[in-house]
Length: 128
Image 1 (spheres, rainbow, N blue to C red):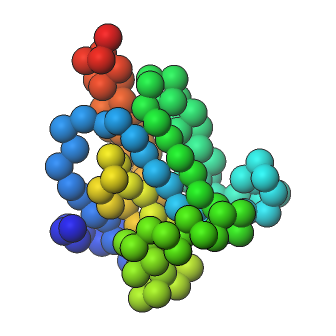
Image 2 (cartoon, one colour):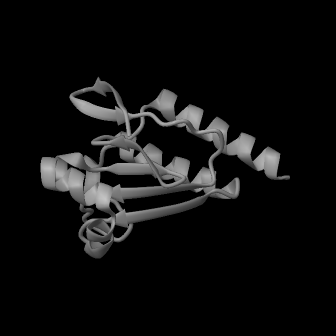
């Protein structure tokens, strides 16, 4: 894994992504099963959750693991476990594309979300 830049003090991991078949997200704790925590919910998080729903419609497998709901998933993923050991909860969210660590410590920006959706649509077109 290659750390290519820092954004708002958080790492952005970039890996070659010729296609998108799956996304796995390891989220920080949520207040409710709906992933909503009242009015304080981060807009990047809300927009990312909406993006995941759109990506699913393109045939991309998406999985979300929320720390206070599925803590064993965090223990079972070596990369997530190592990041959390080093940085604690500040390492979250951790996002993988096709099993490769892509982003840690923040949700994708608006421009990144747009690029991810373009890749999902391209994947769906290629699969059709």
